[in-house]
Each structure stands twice: as structure tokens, then as C-alpha cells.
Length: 84
Image (tube, rainbow, N blue to C red; front, side, top):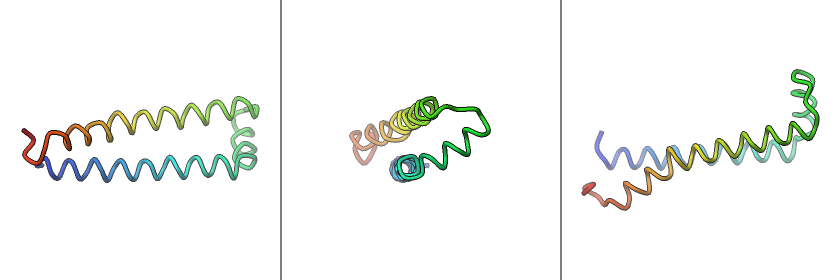
């Protein structure tokens, strides 16, 4: 795999992962009560604990996207077309 292909793949992965985190956030905001009822029944979660787990999960996911997709893409972009 050459540098250009890897750079394109990392950019595509970053976009897809940010779409997933945006969808997750929208579901959390607009369907909070329904999701809490479903998961609260399975795991005995209070609304506060559900919010904490959801927010922490989104934060960890976002950090992973930054660390494994966006930062390598930025480095490869700054290195230039030939990777030198």
C-alpha cells in the first residue's frame, strides 16, 4: 500500500467514524429516554449513570478516532506527496 492510498483510507475512516459519533450523539439526545429504558432494564442503570457511561463512551471513541485516524492522516499530509 502506498502513502497516497493510506492517506485516503485514513481520511475515509475519519469521516465514517465522525459520522458514527454524530449519529450516536443524535440518538442520545433525541431518544435518551427510550434508550435508557431499554438499557436500564438490562443493567439496572440510573439516569445519571446512563448519562455518564454514554458520555464516557463517546469521549473514548472520539479519542480513538483522533489518535488512530486523524493524527496519522495529518502526519502523512504534512509529510507531502512522496512521504519524504
